[in-house]
Amino acid sequence: MGILSVITFLPLLGALAILFIPKEQVKAIRATGILAALASLAASLYALTSYDPGSMAMTGLPIQFVEKFSWIPSFNIHYHMGVDGLSFPIVLLTTFLCFLAAVYSIGIKERVKEFYFWYLVLEVGMLGVFCALDMFLFYMFWELTLVPMYFLIGVWGGPKKEFAAIKFFLFTLFGSVFMLLGILALYFQTSPHTFDMLEMMSAAASGAFPREFQIIVFLAFWLGLAVKVPAFPFHTWLPLAHVEAPTPVSVILAGVLLKMGVYGILRISFSILPAGYEWFLPYMAVIAFINIVYGALCAMAQTDMKKMVAYSSINHMGYCLLGMVAVSATGFNGAVLQMINHGLITGALFFLVGVIYDRAHTRDITAFGGLGARVPVYAGLMAMTCFASLGLPGLAGFVSEFLCFLGAFDKWKLFTILSVSGILVTAAFFLRMLQKVFLGPLNEKWKDLPDMDLRELVSVVPLAVLMLAFGIWPRWVLDLMNPTMTVMAKMFPGMFALVR
Image 1 (tube, helix red, strand yellow):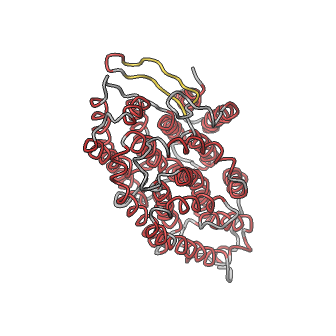
Image 2 (cartoon, helix red, strand yellow):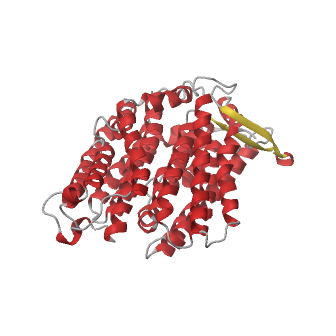
Image 3 (cartoon, helix red, strand yellow):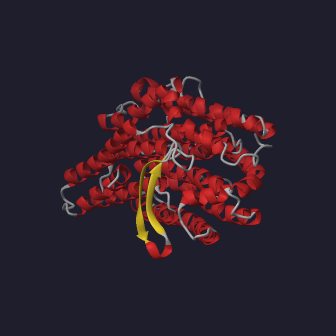
């Protein structure tokens, strides 16, 4: 068994082990869940020590840790796993966030056994999506994430949890049906028929897919992937799902699940359907602009902290789309780095919103005031995370947003200039929130509010450290992804010449 299978299926071993622990033994269940997530993180860090970003495989992409064997020979389906500079950083992010959220989940008091079981199954699905290089396998892992997330929101969520869970499930399933049709179309169009992504990329490079075919299949994939981004107008499930989900699930939803959409667009829509991608670029630029500005304005209108952060996710994922319309190494690096930084920053924001909600049982921004002096550690971490999210230089968010703007400006000047206004609105709503919650006279109702405890600090401080580290020295991440992004930007010479 290769290292990627170990990383992916260690949480499944933990989930199966939890099934054999009596539900009364809550501490043992929590320990098993946390250790399983930690083991997957340790395995991914071990893989990092062997990963060579510049090592090019026969495909031209630096695919490493490849595992491939025949699975369903009659349909040419393989168990095919591998990572490169696009997927490996997201695998590291996934295992890291899943471990921190598992620690934070110690606060879950009801049906702990079921919670950790579904939580670990969800981690398996997410990791599999980023490691799979066979379309059939990719789709299986993609669909595997649906059921655990449905239960995690629907059982442990807020007052509207059932509606939020059903809306999430139906939106994602709606998109997945079209994506399945796209996968089948690619399978029958390749000769010999195959689900292998790398073989499909080679077929695309050799001109095996007609332009009209690519456009139709691209749209099928877009419907499946845009729901996950979420790209306008398929974003409406996200705020409700975030608000109703328990804190650790909100962290995973924002930190990892949204990345599946952007990853799929780069891995499949761009790499296999370049003519469809080129045709859609003007529309994607418009959608990126709408995501950035509309998401920020919606966040500005919120008084619920969690809903504000949820809408800010729509805004920040718009930067990823903006970086992708550049079709350049700079833009692609910006888009992937934005995925990583958004996972760290928004993950921390949802943790911090959960911290205050656990104490005050309200997320209403106007209900607080003067908390900065009462809970200084919490106030400091929240301020740092908000500054990172609004793009303050020296923190992680600035670097990725700057690269997205830098990459897109050359070709899409108007949309890039207009999209910069999103940064101003983002700064406005975060600064307003900090002012209303932490500054001014203390609301006497919260005079006995305790500061963060050890569990919460263990969950948030590592994210804060990485925000600062990646803001000062982004090469730690960029060196992992840049060789792959450079190859991808040059995969189809001449096709995107006007964009470049």
